[in-house]
Image (cartoon, rainbow, N blue to C red; front, side, top):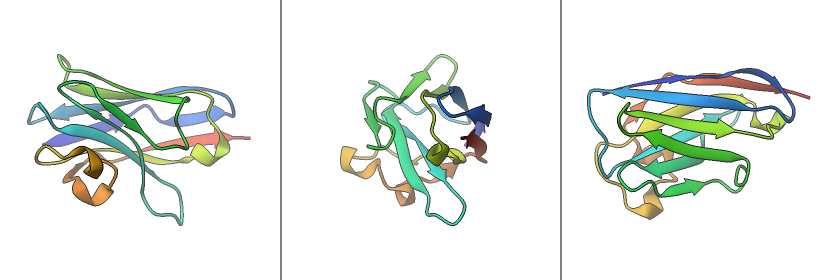
Length: 126
């Protein structure tokens, strides 16, 4: 399984970016695909996840109302639309997927994911 994240860049406060996560090697069916981020000196944290089959989504409180996660099953690609970006959103963003189906309560923990993309850097200037 390979995950390829892209779409990061430099944006001003209030701007928008859309991240993509292209997957190869498997289809996700009932598994979730998650987005996590890690800022320098901080732990990796949950951003959002979507259950591939039915589209149920989860968000971290810090991004609710600003970020939207989606997926295109035909393209086997996930997306993270990020609006109203703030300097505190600056981080490396990673997409990830587990080997199997996670129960809802486990989608938030990065240790529950087995496959990781390489990360894409998002920098929000003030």
